[in-house]
Image 1 (spheres, rainbow, N blue to C red):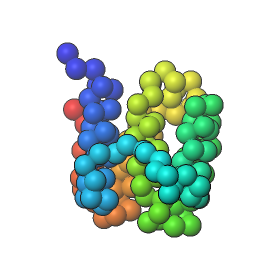
Image 2: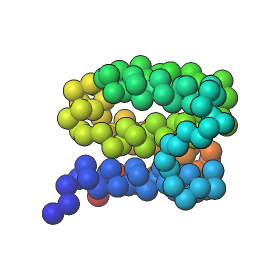
Image 3: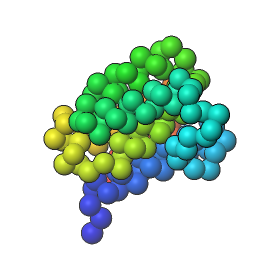
Image 4: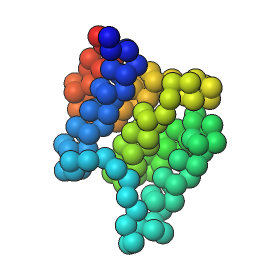
Length: 128
């Protein structure tokens, strides 16, 4: 029997990958810091976001991400995809322990899709 959260995790992963393909023209969503990116603003922001998440400050990290998206949606979109993809790999217990949920990960990805007029792609995300 498929556990509902496993199913939702796969749907979130697939949605992130679909957005990466459609919006960024990439087949994968894997953060890789290239030499010319090492000192870029978005690279530093991503590093800060992941550090915050790993320290249990998930909501604060998401707030920082939203602040960055407001500044420059195009540059931040890719970082946001990486961020939600990373959150999706975390256990439900870790998320819950830090006042976050799989549902919020799903909503974040849906928000990204909506921001590009692609909300219909995730319309049924998480429904089984």
